[in-house]
Image 1 (cartoon, rainbow, N blue to C red):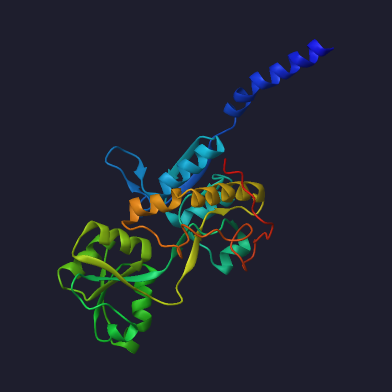
Image 2 (image 1 turned 90 degrees about the vertical axis):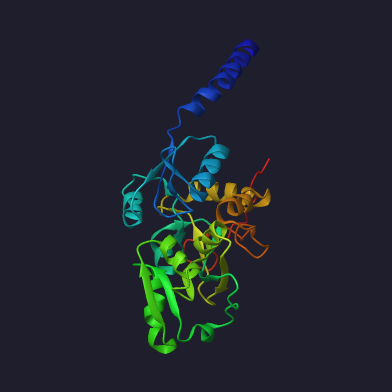
Length: 279
């Protein structure tokens, strides 16, 4: 009997790696045109913060991962249809989205931020923008903000087909400031010494988290545990500095461990205390 038990244990141990290898790859989707989060690589495929982040998440899960590049507008419907396990795309966690999806806690903040030409006096408040020309990427929330405040602040809108062109307009003196998302502004600043990340609009901070279907609570929690471990050991902060050009401070989401699972005070939040095994 002892021999039979020992043989069974040896068989189970031997089969362990083989069973792990039979797990299908994780599948996620990303907008592959959103530099520096995900954008084409000269070597083929896509590169960026999101790619590095979720390849490391998958590695720590002991899984392969397939990252598909597609238009952002189609990613959530595709995930809900079962094509993806989750999205690698940075996704703003709003109350409306949290009603329909499960999210991890934020690993980045998304905020509206201005970039200015080096040597320009820093922007202290919205009043400093009065009468100025603001450059933006067309069809974005940043263009919408300028349009919504155009009359109040006497703003002139200068819209471009790409963020790179909008930033260049500031460097050339065609625009006083460039409005975009904080990570993109930081990236633009890292690409040119004449461009400086400046004023952040108050009240525009949201979590950028990872969305899952509502029936994927166990996987959401597993991925969040890994992201928490990556915050503890500095991996998320290092990737942030690599791709966005500056080290995140202690008040940034790359370093903050939020309580429970999901975004506190929003639908889908699970208050169960995290206790990840980061060994």
